[in-house]
Amino acid sequence: MKIVTYSPLPWEVPDAKLELGQHQLVRLVGEVGFMVRQVTAKKPDLVFIVGFEPAEPHYIDEVEKLCLALPHAAIVALHPQTEPKLLLSLMRAGVREVIVDSAPETLQKVIERILLRTKGASITKGRVFGFVSSKGGMAAPA
Image (cartoon, rainbow, N blue to C red; front, side):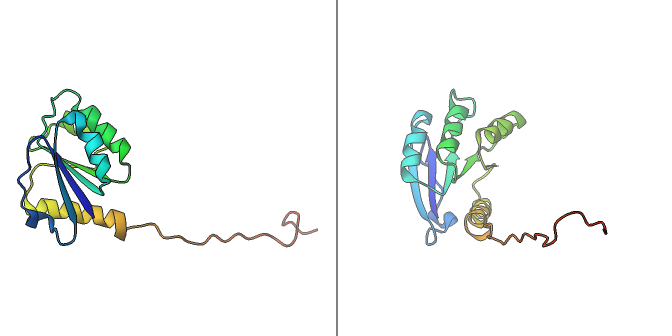
């Protein structure tokens, strides 16, 4: 799975927390206004947005643009202090999850859930049977 982290400052999460043997990690640093262009160029399966202030102008708008540009990617925002208004805004924007810490257990659970959605829990194709009566008319005796 291709994982991208995007933050205004380098996010100091040890590589061991993300099990890099199984996943490809790309760390991007930049401003909110450049987020959509930089992240979409990497075509990730999972995006961690870290370190942005929710009160920052255009933050929610840029997150929504990112979610629309990457409909199949899971967007996860890290905000240590979450308010109901912020959570509602992020969910309306299309964020898959909001986490409050970057503990190894939390990151692993997020990655496992995303893997289940992308690979393990896919919809299987089934069969549809249709039956047609060989005798026309109503079922009443004549």
